Amino acid sequence: MEEQEMKRFDFIFVFLSLLFFIASCDASDEYTVNPHDNFEALWKLIDEKYCFFDYKDIDWDAVYDKYSVQISDTMDRYQLFNVLGKMLAELRDGHTNLISSFNTSQFWNWHDSYPDNFNPVVQRKYLGDDYKSIGELNCCILRNHFGYVYYGSFSGSVSEADLDDLFLYFEHCRGLIIDIRNNGGGSLVYSERIASRFTEEKRIVGYIIHKKSAAHNDFSDPYPMELEPSKWKKWLRPVVVLTNRSCYSAANDFVNKMKLFSQVKIIGDKTGGGCGLPFHSELPNGWSVRFSSSPMLDAKKEYTEYGVDPHIKIDIKEEDQLDSIDTIIEEALNYLRDETAESTPVTADAGYINK
Image (cartoon, rainbow, N blue to C red; front, side, top):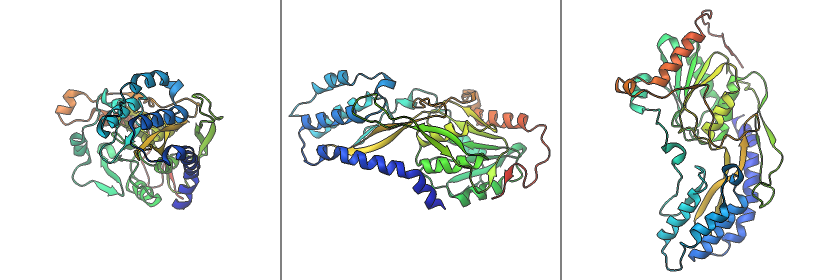
């Protein structure tokens, strides 16, 4: 069943990747190290395929004028890489990278200018020494019998069996905390798989659009993305998802989905964003380039490139951190305590549905 789900979700990526490969063949068929040739190839590739020019109000022609004068035939590959990397940083996009054998360019400001709102040393104290690892999910039961699970990367595999084991472990808990702070993303398959455990009905969770031509703002009509409820065990009790600015890409997508469910509250900081599907191409000198080419919109057809707002915005207090207290986890525990104060005693089958 997992293989079928992955094929179903990934077909659009394969199709668009093939289109991208075909479109970029002319630029990569002839190997050359000429700095001017590689600059022109990169600028043109981004000009024709990047998807957020208008949304971010980027004047790409002005970027050309700024960086083309910095290119010379006598510069070495390290100097060229530095200039091209700075040019790509003008896109202000964490999904955009230039990749060579000796370096990878990265735009970090999507989270560097914000509070960390996550201290792994303090968070580790909440997990304790006898926490349970279910695949890539680290979990424990906190005070007042609330479940806590930390998922550090959507690159870490999460199977249907893992999720069933997780819910069985928490079967007597009144509420659940899902902590994805500092989760930089990974596979959208796992975002969909986990989110599908928290709904009883199929729903539109967003839309995708793609470039129709080289024009900066020539996009297709939005195509709906639907989330099917899982056929496996589901959790319908109160849930809190903890976020910070270092939640990016697939983590941003997960928060966007979870925010639609009535039993879920998002607590912490705004996510880092990253709603553009990244694709790869190659420059004439063999360097790889990755950038956003197809925007994913939320259920209201709005961009989440700059992040998803929490229901409850809260930062970690410095005085709490000094006392090994995680302000955001404490806020989640207080919320669940109040939310479940009038609830009846929990039985093994209350609040979730067997497959």
